[in-house]
Length: 149
Image (cartoon, rainbow, N blue to C red):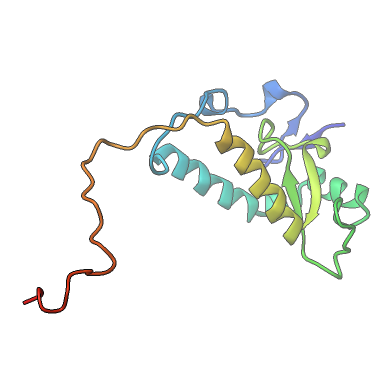
């Protein structure tokens, strides 16, 4: 089954989908988000709030296939806010229904946190910059009151 991509063009295979080289690269450690990560995050936010995503046939097909219920806790759209989670970003912009999962907001947060924990657990731990650390001052002054002047 084919669905139109964000631009409304048919998307038949992975070769039709725009992919960035960053999707294939292993992320390097950095203390903060890089400029490219911020751009990707901005692009993601714009796409998720766009009409192309809200009316995406793949998104709507997944909602119908789930019976408009969360796939984990079975909450209906009347009981909780339903969101459609990307299981993979390989086809981002021209998703297939199989790339998506319907979740309520709470389950979506839980799944996202679990996936991030797994991702960062595999990331290498980089030692902090070598900085001499002074020992903390004592919590109590045990000298006699007479010695303190």
